[in-house]
Length: 186
Length: 186
DNA sequence: ACAGTCTCTGACCGATCGGTCAGTTACCGT
DNA sequence: ACGGTAACTGACCGATCGGTCAGAGACTGT
Image (tube, rainbow over all chains, first blue to last red):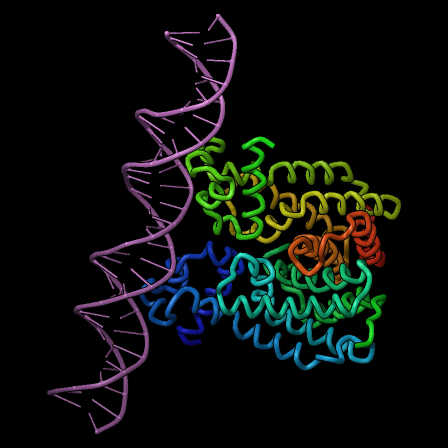
């Protein structure tokens, strides 16, 4: 792996665990076995490092939301969406954990604003398509709960579980959570 | 409200939104209309402020876990536990949001270590009482999802919903999530 | 009037923050 | 052998961090 990608991976992990504000360039440099100056050689600023760390995940989430626009969550496409979303979470759980928990309070950072805009899009769509308070909570628990359980998976009590089994179980649970939710036509 | 309690409430909110590391004493002082020196007059240190902010929530969680020890989650007591837990989340959602997301990375802070120990207790109990991967995930999604949905409730798309309705819906959803989970006898 | 205590403040401290810059090293094609 | 460039570094900068300290006001009981 290149030094550039190395730094991106280290930064992503530290940002997710210790927070963006709680992670210094000095620490990232030490974990990479470099000097702080070298980190700033590969990335123009700490903010650029943040952008490189979570940008790809936001791009992919954007694509997922775009591909289902207009036909979201009617029964035929619901399972496909859930599977896409679970796969997204499995691949980008650190990034999701980051901008779920640090999205507010990291404003004025372009890439974070873009992520927040996506969340707002998703959330206002649910607001217009879903009627009851309970249905709102079902969406929130499904999305937030799945993201949470994956963010603590690796260092928590759960060891290295087979990813296929985790994926299948997540699809089952999320599908079950959203089963009672009926979506109004657009 | 006293200045002391005022500062505690402001600090809790900022710690939850911007993170412990991302919140300066200067900012807390400004929000309270005081100088930084005054904040340090009421609390010996930033860490003491953190302790005061989340300590009461940890005490209560400790009490809840203690009261159900040994008889946890058999069918008769399961609903009572869920209702207690939901009430706890409704009252202390900022604190829960804090030490769920910043628990790791805030080690060596006594009050955080105590909270982490509680989470480990809860989680290892589930590990010994629950068998399948799916059941583990059900617990995680229920707890983490409920905590998440409440942490974004106030400034998210959900406005001021009637708390009774939210409580009832949460109890319904969490009960449903945990319904398929069978617990081994101790 | 006086001493004591509670609340609050600005000035100041060493440490660390993100970031700049000049310079060194190593490897490249010619 | 030589110039160019990519990778890297230490020294340094202003700003901000958490925290200390001496003292200013305000309000008490005596």
